[in-house]
Image 1 (cartoon, rainbow, N blue to C red):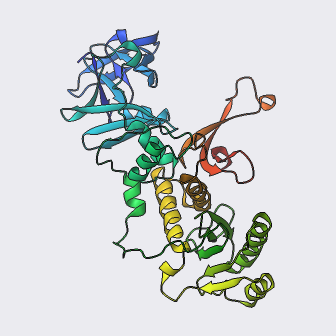
Image 2 (cartoon, rainbow, N blue to C red):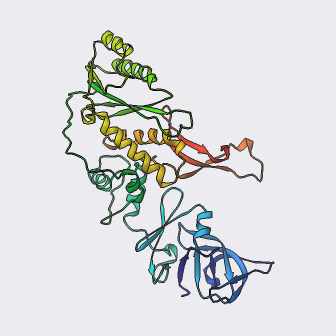
Image 3 (cartoon, rainbow, N blue to C red):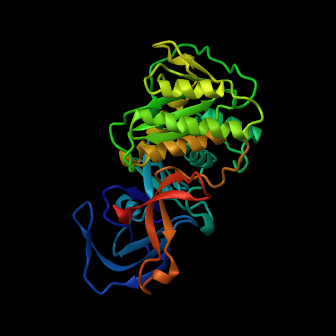
Length: 393
């Protein structure tokens, strides 16, 4: 067993009885003993670092006398910022950026890393070809695996590598966030011939929890031709007019072709004198969908897509629900880039842990050089990420 490392969820720390594994080892001055399962004890002779692969280095590993096993502690991996995922027949270790660090295989009733058949530079089981598809599945807001593979094979998105996948990939956050009753066959189709000809709009809310900025509603606007969407966050539904007015005027200035119509449901935030006067002044037709027939309003499908993405992204990292608006922004940002040809190299998984370098001029010599943060999406008006600094709770 000296060449096998066992993943142990009840072990308090990494430990081994074989000094050959250590890249660095320091003796301990205090007396410390490890109690084994048979109630025997082994003295801790030293503590050091063990490199299992280029991506996975174990720190604070105990060198224990008379210990016949090499144990990797799940608790210590979690403390070091890794995430350990167990499922039937496999165990995966990923880092804060959702990169697969290590895969383990069943070994009796436990999972093991077998290092006997690989070189020293790659001692951990090599990540399967599906590692990249999991990373991009999360970065693209839990896009379906079938569509992700199709986009990859056709080269439709700059920066998205060629992906391969095993059969029957199952994402548990997707099951939690996207499960719905079977739907009727869709009958809607694009009825326009150029961008900006017809806009669909709808409001979603109120949310059960206010966003970080105190918003309760979101206005969703979708271009019928491009399926490009915009989202705006509101305290009250009647704020929709201001956002729609500004967007329509901006699009009319940017487009060489005339906007023809706006379509919405019969909600009071859309059916009022302010909207009627505005549309009349611009010679726009205001179309209303029939009551209780959501498919007639082309934004309903977009709402469902965004809400499912948001639910799934929040669920995966147990991100607090007050960040729902940030998740909606991120979902919209991703959805607008899936069927175009932008670069997606900068995309990261929503809710993952990230780190920001502090400004050098404000650092104490012995102070940490970075801040712990949660990734919350992309800035709309600059090339920047949106993050939540954990120290600012």
